[in-house]
Amino acid sequence: MSVTHVPKPWGEEILFARTGRYAGKILRIRAGESLSLQYHERKEESLYLYQGSLRLLLPGEAPDLRDRILEPGEAVHLPPGTRHRMEALTDCVVFEVSTPELEDVVRLEDRYGRA
Image 1 (cartoon, rainbow, N blue to C red):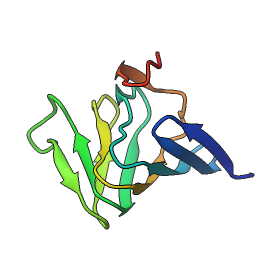
Image 2 (cartoon, one colour):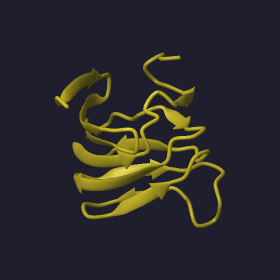
Image 3 (spheres, helix red, strand yellow):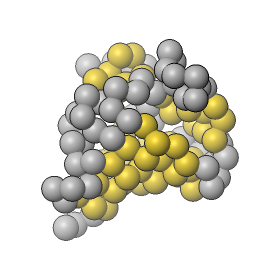
Image 4 (cartoon, one colour):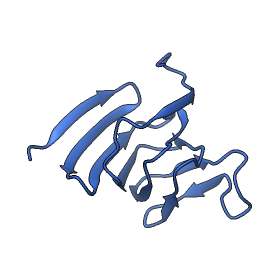
């Protein structure tokens, strides 16, 4: 598989692995930018903050999932159906490992006008 670089309004997504069982990405998020408030119907993902400071918003979820500030070395697991948004407090590098349903994104809010 070749590595795919996808420009995003908030930074860049680098897809480095995709099989029938899993996918691996690197997300580069510029300071002050955020991804959409979203959830996935089938996709399950784990995030690892490699660099930077990141606010992870988890509105209305179970008590063990709440808004939190992630620092380098912290990880979080997001089961399907978990509403979430990442906001970069500084330039961030996030490693994402997920199930392979990459198109499974339901956007609830998006500051860049994406559907």
